[in-house]
Length: 347
Image 1 (tube, rainbow, N blue to C red):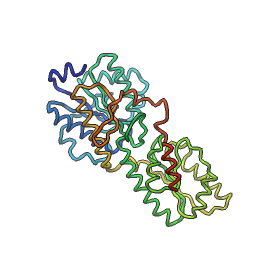
Image 2: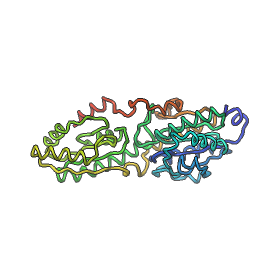
Image 3: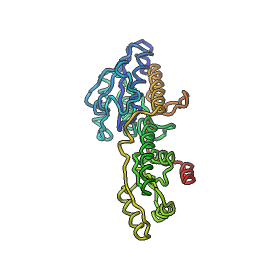
Image 4: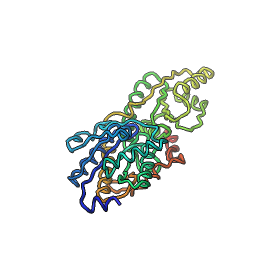
């Protein structure tokens, strides 16, 4: 076990931190938490940031981090370490073994990862290789994604509420101009195959309709709803829906012409505006709690694991990494029926 040769014998501890996949506001708060908790709880710990995510782990590019390096970064969006997607890591067994050995050869006792689905799958794969080859590094991971689409995550992903804040701002701005001209706005939202970001933003700002992935939309009924409102209408479209904003616009405009509905349609995609910006307080607290819990478990010599929800300081016990990487079902992508019913009732 890791603790037999390291913790119980008082050896120096070496940590690495990696932010993977798409950036999300709150990742910097996670970095700050791991660095400061590690150095305060055990001063002889050395903490290293992996530059540009998985790309840096492949290339052995690291940066040592001290307390001053993470001062004032908690509210800052993005990630100070950078992140680059490496899709080939998912299927390249030789590359996976190289990464596992890089960690071992650099004497990293623990790798702390904050990332989305792809990063968590990579963690599970690396953990299996490391244990099969008798290598030293253990991996502790938590969800960092604006999409909130990680399997078996019992809370929200770091960055979700920050992206939601940006979405609310933009939807309110669009409301102002939409109401002035009685226009219909089709508003695209990020979220990949999950509709959580689109749904939560639409509910909070009173959007008239929310189109989710895998939904069979009745456009004739949608046109009737727009006609009956006789005023501005905002329709939020989740990223994973199988038609683009322009395709939806063309369908509705054809129905409007046929039924003589005199309404203008505009399209706007919130896109990367949702991803950036200052981190929400809830994401900062979430990231800070998870970082602290992961550091204390590492210093106690715990095995690899996936760290998820916390509730006012009470944590869900860590899960095996394989559980977080299991997307064999799509339940974690689907909006609960009660939320859908509430959305319909709020129109």
